[in-house]
Every structure is written in C-alpha cells, then in structure tokens.
Length: 513
Image (cartoon, rainbow, N blue to C red; front, side, top):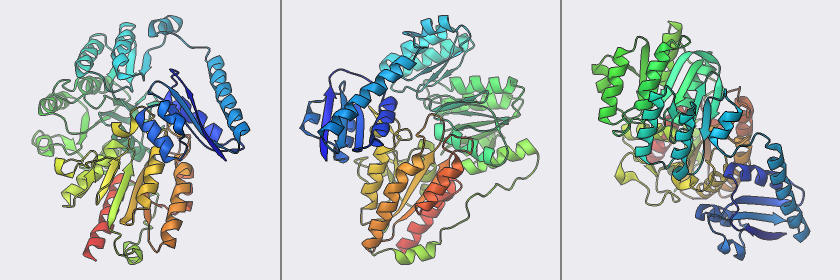
C-alpha cells in the first residue's frame, strides 16, 4: 500500500462536494481510504488522524485543495486522481443552470422566490441583500455574519414582505419542501417557528410518527431572539402562521431568548388568535405561566401538547423501540474504572436538552457548550469525566461540512472515546434528511462493531445508545437506519429525552456501586 497527498494550490471546492467524491474514491478498487478537503488546520488534523498524511501535507494552506489517498500502488493512486478530475468535470458539465449572480439567476427564472445562501460569512450579507432586492425570500445557512447586518437584512425583509431565515439557519419546511438539514414529514395543521434546528426537527418527526403533520416550519437563525435582533423573524412568522389557513396551532422553539426579545414575543403571542405552545430550552417558564401561555418542558412534552390540541383528545405517543436496556445487567459487566458517559451529538438543541436534564437532576456534565462556565471543557477535543460534545459546533465544522453531512470527525471521536478505559456509555444521535449524509448509520456501524468487540476482548463493557431524528420519508429511511444500528449492537430510544434519562440512570447506578 502507498499513502500519497496531492496538493493543488489556490483551488477551492465546496466541502460537501469534496466529501461525496472522497466517498466514491474510497469505494473504488485498489483504494483503501481517501480524504479530500481544503487545507484548513482541522482538515489537516483529520487527514493525520486517519493516517493519510505525508510530508507534503505541511505545504498546504487554507486555500489549497488536498487529496489524501491510501492506495494499492502508485498506479492506483494516479488512477484515483484521474477519477477525481473526471468527477469534477462531470459535475461542471452537468451544471447547465449555473449563474454568476443572484440577479442573473432571477432574470433567467422570474418565478423563483427563494434564495438559499451558503457562502463564507463575509460574503453572505451582500448576497442576501441582492436576493431581497430581487423580491426573493432568503434561507441563509451561512453563519459568522455581523449581527448589525442581520438586523438590517431582517428589517429590509419585513419591509419587502419577505422572510429572512438566518444567518445560521439550519432548516425550514415550507409548503411541504424540506430546506437545509431537514427531514421530510407529512403535511398537517401544526406550524412551527424556531431558532433551533435540531429542536424543530425533533418535534417535527415526533408529530409525524404519531400521524400528525406540519403546515410550515420556519427557521429564524440562532440569534433571532437576541437583544439586538429582538425576535424579528419569529414575530413576523407568528403573524404569517396566524393568517395561514392551513395552520391550526403554532409552536415556538428556541434556546433561551433575551429578556427584551422574550417580552416582545409574549406580547405577540397574547395578540394571536390561534393557540400557541412554547418550548424555550432552559427558558423562564414562570413568565409564560404568568401570562397564561402554554408551554412544554421538553421536546417530547411539547409534541404531546401539540397533538392533543390538534386532535382535541389525549394522545398516547407511539413507541417504536421497546426498552432493551437492562441497566442492572449492564452494570454487572462494567470493569472497575469504567464510570463515565461520553455523548457525541450532531444536534445542538439535543445536546442542550441533555445538559438541562442532567443539570436539573444534580449531576455534572462537561461540554463544549456547557450551561455553566465551570463545566466548560478546556479543550473541546478532549473529554473530561462525564462529557457531552456538540460536534456540530463551530470548533468542529470550521472549514468543513457539518458533521451530519460528513461524519468523519465523529467516527474519529467515537473511536477515541471507545478506547478510553474510563468510558462506560457512548450516546450518539443520527439526523436524517435530504441534504444530510445518505447513510449515517452504516458509517458508524463498522466502528461501533469493532470497538465493542475490542472492549469485550479487554474485559470491558461498552454500551452504545442512540436516537434517530428522522422519518420513514427521508431518503435514508428511519427504519433501515434503525436496523443497521441494532445489528451493530446499539440500543435505540424513541427520543433524545428518553436517551438522556437512561444514560443518567446508568451513570448514577455506577456511582452508587
């Protein structure tokens, strides 16, 4: 076998596109592994962790393309490089509807009413302004946009009667179309507005599994409920859903809002003629209660309230996975010294919900996005005691695709945690949707099977638990993903909250032992 790095100076390609090509090359005959990306520090670290680095890697800068391949021989490497450029040219030739600017795209497609923007943050605001000035709604996946620009863009959008979803908007579901990192679900009479991508999706899929549906789910971007932005898109969306004939109930989902934005949203809820249910993670529910506003304490409870309001009766949530975790039996198998949870989640809101549960029940859980400063990990790449990692955080995604699109970083982190002699439980979430990795379960299954077997040979017990935030309508297929994970020895739970609770119970009993 040979390992070689091919560097092309000042050649940029989209990270998701590169990931797809790397996967195709890895599946080629005589190629054992391939990693392709721009020469950012994190990408270079990933290539090194995969054992695909050579001395040439040091010469690559952030603007340079790196193709790192482990192949049978030099001829196989050369053939893989040729295949890379064939695939690049194939994509270029196929892209007949390619335009140099938003105005030119609009001129060629006068009926287009939505611009999806995913460019570097310093360019994103300009492109969003161009889209709005061309009478288009904006879905901005890009982050690292100046908050002053966000305020101005949202003001302009409202003036023009358009929506400015973002910056940092992970997903939306408009008129039955899944946008961004979103699951496909049934249409129905429940409308959602959220400043939390995985939080919106968790509620959406829980409703879908129980036979309910979504009219629209409008993502606002994570800073919408800040003092500066003042809930501009959330308030605009409440008004729009109130006027929408297909929406019967409205749900609001977010991380804790600023006090000033919270008051503005409460005032809007009180004016709304439709029922509104609120779930603000770690928010001030007493203020909602004082104002007579319905709220859920968890995503599960929020979904249940919405189903009961929609149907007019009490609903018993559908249970897909039987409780296969026998905690007492698992406790007996752990080796002395095995005592910690290591959770590696793609969903930021799911990470927050887990942190909130542990915090409310009096147990420390360290994190790169901790609720308390004293529980913040000093190094996000190294766990400490009981830890949960939001691996979709910027520290892990800067210069590369989100981990739910390119799972490489999580596979590496999983292996690291699985080999830690103090690890007892690893918790993973799997996000499904059209823009996400086509088969996330299979990517992880090989590592899970191998590391569980390694632990067994070393006399350790490694419990791997997981949830799947997706639906049977997603291209990955919820049930297919579930089977792959079960076959790998993973214990599945219906919701993030149930998984967080079970992980807590195991660690609590280990400490008692």
